[in-house]
Image (cartoon, rainbow, N blue to C red; front, side):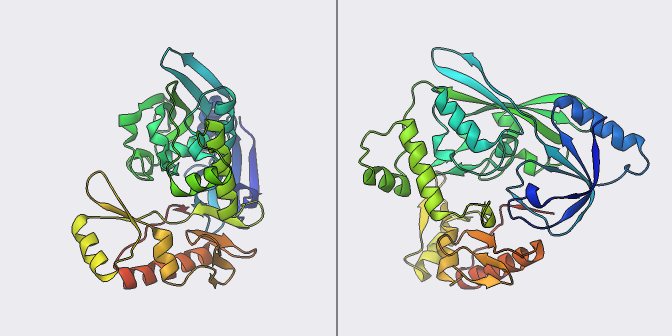
Length: 343
């Protein structure tokens, strides 16, 4: 059976750095460990019926209290090129692989495409759940398939792109399949006919400042890393979960009403005619950049990022996020939706 740890500290397993504990924890280092952990919980009266929480990098979670159940720490490792055709490469990584390291590894293999998603915190297994995205690219564009463990019957199930029902920072794993499936590995199809995604303003400026006119995938990767490090705090030194709010999407009629009141509102037209609003701009306009509630604060360089200045609790971060949401709604009539999962 997998080893079970009691009264286990989770401070190193959530990027906010909240000092919380779990009643029990176990490490999932291989697919066989999943079945063993389930059997252990079923057969031990002390464990049966306890709630379960899965943590990878802990980069998209707000832990508000000690967890009264069992935390599964996902550490499955492995990455490989599965297949190569004249058109593309098929690459695979285990769920516990660090996402940024996987992106860098892909470039080292000559498999370009994910470079715009460099330095996003978290693991490969978490990427499809959130359909992570940045600088003009969403993960779903290069996604091929994934393997997941069905916790209800113990079978391995394969999901293709349609099965995952990807949306903006969304997937079936945040909706109907939220508690049923555990992602164990993910595959990406990387085209050999690569084209750079360098039009996003921050990246274009960084490339221009470096004198790069025809960027390679590595040039874009390096530019993304520099931009993110300049704008976003390192969780190792200042606890955070990256962007805390989604950019809200509003319909054409709501946008027309909003722009009539706020002509300079920052927005991006979507293919269906709706408009994606810049949440950071909305928050900044409400004067929240750099402000704090207790030891939870809005980062002074990026209004989308909430940080733990050292002794904040999950409750402090939630109180801060609610105050921000209230101000944005009262001023603009727009509801901000948090990205992280609250536990």
